[in-house]
Amino acid sequence: MCQLVCRGEKNMMAEKLFAGFVLTMIAVVAVAKDIAFDVKANYDKAEYKIRMADGVSLHTVVYSPQDKTLKYPFLIVRTPYSAKPYGPDDFLPADRIAPSLEFLEDGYIFVFQEVRGTYQSDGIWENLRPARTDKAGTDESTDTHNTLDWLLENIPGNNAHAGLW
Image (cartoon, rainbow, N blue to C red):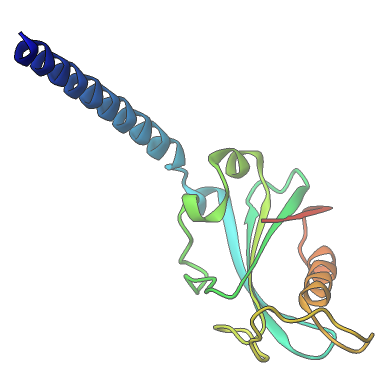
C-alpha cells in the first residue's frame, strides 16, 4: 500500500515540477520578446573623450533618442569595464543599455563611461580611489561632476536631469 501511495506522490511531485518548469520557460520567452527592441532604429550613438579638470580624458559613449522633439534625462553608467562595442555602427543590445525595456521606450540619454585608467580612458586606474582630501585632488565624485557638467553643455536634447545606474 505504501509503495503505491509513495509512488503516486512522487509522480504528482514530478508533474508539479514539470508544470513549474514549463511556466518558467513561458515567462522567459515573454521577457526575451519584450527585450527585442531595435536600438539602432530608435537611438543615435556617439563617442567622446571628456576632459576632466586635471586634464585626464575619459572615454564616453552616448546613446541619444532619435526623436528630437522631446528633452530627455541622462542615465549614466561609470564603469571600470569596457563600454564596447566601439565605433559608430556597433550598438549594445537592448538588454545591456537599460535596466528594462520601459527605459528604452520612455526615452533616456544613456551614457557609458570608462573610468580612469581603464580601456580607452586616460589616467591611472586605482581600485576604490579614496575620497579626495584637498580641493586639487580627484576622486570618483569629481570625475562624475566634470562628466555631468560636460554632458549638460554638449549633448543636445537633455532636460538637465540625471541618474546613475
